Image (tube, rainbow, N blue to C red; front, side):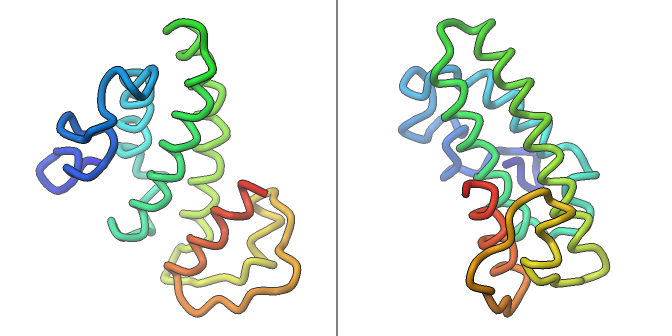
Length: 141
């Protein structure tokens, strides 16, 4: 994630000094390009603080890494990333929209607009950070 000065945080896997940066992550340049696109899109983060956006971006990057790792070559990785990016952007925009105006919705009310199954049993959401953590789990279910 690009911080205040436009730099990727040193602990982020896309940072050049991170131990997984480079050859061991598969198509890291493809993932990095997608991550930069997500980071720069205000429609995906306008209602979120950086602390709220970071775990969402980490979730997106992890998904992109997992999907592109299966690619046979860079062209295939780019095609996979483009398809995955559409799904991720939709999810991120949905989360951003739900948190507009300082709102903290329930997971049950968020499930339909995000097109995920509501959790069973119901989970009491205490704050926005908890909402973000729990809603990201619903996308993985």
